[in-house]
Length: 526
Ligand code: TXA
Ligand code: MG
Image 1 (cartoon, protein in one colour):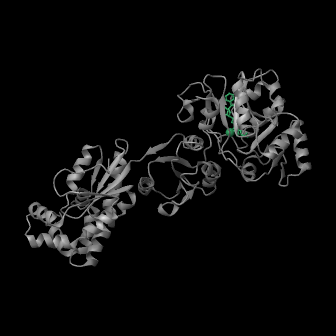
Image 2 (cartoon, protein in one colour):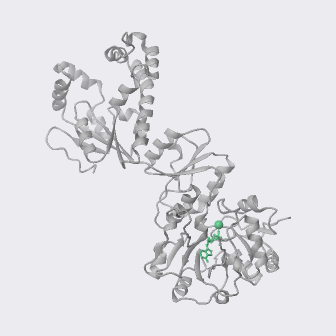
Image 3 (cartoon, protein in one colour):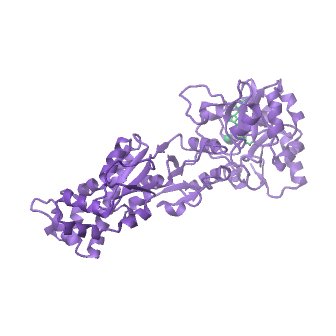
């Protein structure tokens, strides 16, 4: 079939598309939400062609689009007071109401349900085409079933060229996700699909509403869906999508750990450069309308770029964010990873970090002890130990192949270059182990504490949502070091001098805890 594409929308174009629809043809038209694939809603044969063009399951009913209230009355058997109030508040606009269906609506439109979905779009081209057709238009989103809905004409052409009579190019859709669907057949009214009209806005008009569990949950196998569209895998690109919950630094930790060629991130605007995999933004974190506007185009772009796995920053669920989250859940087939908040713990030697770590462990933090990891990476036979021996000489090893720590320390701390060489070998290995430990505990805890003396010089710092610095007065620290490590006063002082200044630590910490003995105040952390 030759698909006529209208890039210029003038009166003649509107009249031609209207006539072709009235005569039983199929045309993709712009709306303020997404592009719709329209047919005469009163013509069962025409509507049947929609299912074929999309590859849509027959049991998934369509929305009927109208341009005036008068067009609604013949389609329904009753107009409840609540429907009138909603129409006054939100029509024309991105809201669909489920109402009792009249005989005029063919079975195929409603997939045999006793109800019909009705929406009055606000897009001027959609309205003009409905008027020109002179009949209500049944229109699902104009994508191949299962793919992300089209938000510009190029998306429609990719999916529908050659399968339908006409495509009307009205530019980018404003809202970007499909309309809000609410049923007034239940009491209180129930939100079946979130969209551009938010739950908060609906409650202002209706009072209390219910949110169908399928909005944020997965339907149980075989359960009946209030809205059949909810049960299908939807909005999904070919790439495997995973939603990662948790703050940005935790997202970075996760993607650093799992990354492979072919991965990409969908992140919030401004975060791209912070990530180590190719990253594309879908709007600012605090701008759910922008996220809705960009989401589907970004998902389609992932396929165009042949991305294999997409990791997505989890949007907030308030306002239009609920619609964004709902679409992402389906694009991800509900694949979601929860990452904990990662706190860094550091401080100068002798300040008593370990005491603070133990207290926070009691409060539910999982503590990742980097000293312990440092010993693990240099265990006998480990690749890191082999690299160290190659770099510093085999005499850092004892005859049985274990590390002689003192020998390594002598060499490594002999010059700043050597110290750098040591860190360049051990830090990446410690970081990898720390990440592994964080990923392993992520289902058990919502807060992780990474205890690392050299945190600020380490990549682990990039994973920290907040840093806690523990300090104490110099004389207190000196005394502690002497007792702990059996050192003379001079030796302890030398240790302290070899480290960055305590003030340096304090300046960089988000939270500073003083530990001169006595009770430790954790109020700023908890
Ligand atoms: O923004 C939109 O609503 C777009 C544009 C084109 O208007 N249309 C759209 O249609 O998203 P579609 O077919 O992709 O989604 C219609 C949704 C489906 O989830 C379907 O199951 C539900 O509405 N639906 C339709 N009739 C229903 C009914 N009688 N009862 C419950 N759910 C219904
Ligand atoms: Mg759809």
